[in-house]
Length: 499
Image (cartoon, rainbow, N blue to C red):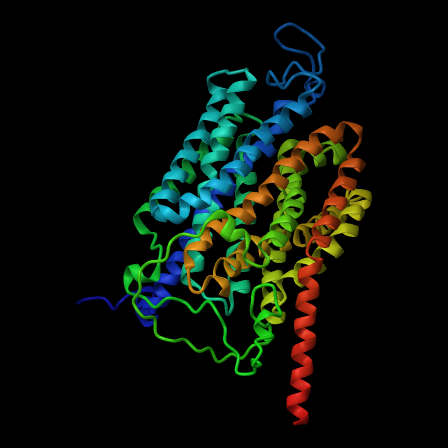
């Protein structure tokens, strides 16, 4: 007697064909970028083990020395170890920032499946080679710097590719919420990276890199076998990228009121005209992408927003060790709460921006509230474990919410902007420009933290608050444009009611 069809298979068969492939793309790209961040996180966890407080371990068992650095890993056993850590961070981040501007151009011209999976396998290789420095007993700085530079370059294959894939499959309607949930891969990767690295950080820290390296390479292989780049490849319907409104006035004011060329209050009845066969459009140039309305403003805003986020990513565990005096593993575990807040912030930002239609206004509002919360975290965040947990979650939501929204929904919106007249070839390039500019801030943040932290952690937080305020100010013009759009919409709505 043959068994009934499995419930999961029955559910899959009940779903429309398009939904099955959209779900596959969403899940697969989620795990892809989760593994990218999972492989970046170990360096922040291992820092405290490369230069621990050796006096707490007693005298050197080999020669009876009372040195406070006898258990440190050379060359990080010197007094300038914070500067060396900053050099490691920036070797990765500067290479990432430079490579990102080039990566989007390649991403538009190469098959995304090959580009993404190849980058993941190479990233796994360089991550594992960094960890093998422990087992090979390597104590020269240039080896670790080279591994970081190579890893930074190959990791640029990730973000433009996954955003382009998701943008190809999902239209603008619920893009903020969908990509807000999907973008939790960043925080999930950071959390898993912290927990996995924490398992071996106090015993064999090399495994804290080797295991994540193996994971990202394995996910890259799965990506090669299962990723579908575009709906047309499997006979599915392409998404609707632009929304038409029945209340659109003759002069087209509504469509230009927002930074992304659509009104936040457009009708839910979307009109989609049949797609006539035509020649495949050429990929957009770098300068052409910069001319898209909103690209420059959001790119510069992300520069400062990402500066704050990546300073927390690379320095938060060390800050907790120095200020709260926790162990390396406990500090790494506690730092994951910042990423838990990031998940909530990304979803909240996407939901609010979908409802209001104001991507820039949502970002600006969260950035305004984030500045005083960063000040409070530095002042009272370490007074108790409960306060620390609450403040980390709140700060994570407010800092990573705008960052998540800009790098996902905003990038996808701008990459399919109305001014492109249906040319979807801009998506990867626009994403690379926005995230590449943000990555300049990601490189500056940890560098400045390494230079400023010897003068006191208070000064590091003042730097972060200043960057947060600048990020908000850079969106002022786009926010004003959105507010004018809402005012115009409300005025027309009142006019219709009176008529």
